[in-house]
Length: 327
Image 1 (cartoon, helix red, strand yellow):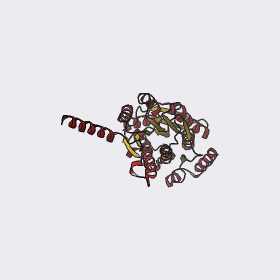
Image 2 (tube, one colour):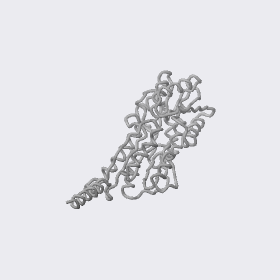
Image 3 (cartoon, helix red, strand yellow):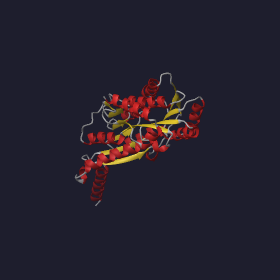
Image 4 (tube, one colour):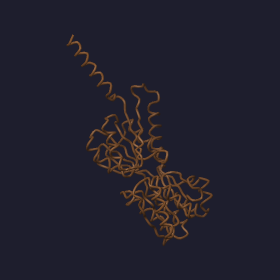
């Protein structure tokens, strides 16, 4: 009886262990949202793109072959992103973690060493040489340059500024320099300022910084600071100055105040990289770029609020510039 009981117990444990282990035939994806989807259209598009790709992949397949997807909203406190990614890896449930943020390669590098079997696909980021990581960076030289160019054209005081959430390589080496160059190419002599909030959520600090810039004569500001952008918008509305918007269509956030929206087509890109992963086509260890020519960056020109807010001669200049960059 004792032997029988021990055998049954061992069998039960074995069965339990097997049933809790992820099926080898199924692929499991975690989408790590470094923010809150309701407050950030680009992160909502991240989740939407991955979900649509999984749904298309699963269509007509048996349940045992269907891919699984889990979406985690990590919030705006970047100090928590690393521990939360580590927790996802530690579960061992997910073959790949898909996310999007320029700061993620720096967070993922040590985590990847800790979990050598974990794969990562990172959008809006650049990293090469790690065989567990694939990145896609948007040609944000184009996006930042276009945004700076219209800021320069629209600035009456010839003073523009960028308010960033934080310093990071893409911001310091790509976004701000090309924003500044665009403004100066549009109107020689235009000056550009740069300020840092220190996080992705402090709207009060964003407003305080913007108010101080406006007092110096800055009349066009580009916010790239997540939730803190709401404070930048409030300052511009209160003072009758302008905002240029980045990574999504922001015209409706402040009609008459937001003069442009340059955006990445995040859902389309996420769907593509997710589909490639599901079909074993991911080129691990490499980094790719996509921009205007490939259809993953757009300078919005057909929104009625753009047409109402920006004079026709400036819209024509922007249209010609977009065509030139698309060649």
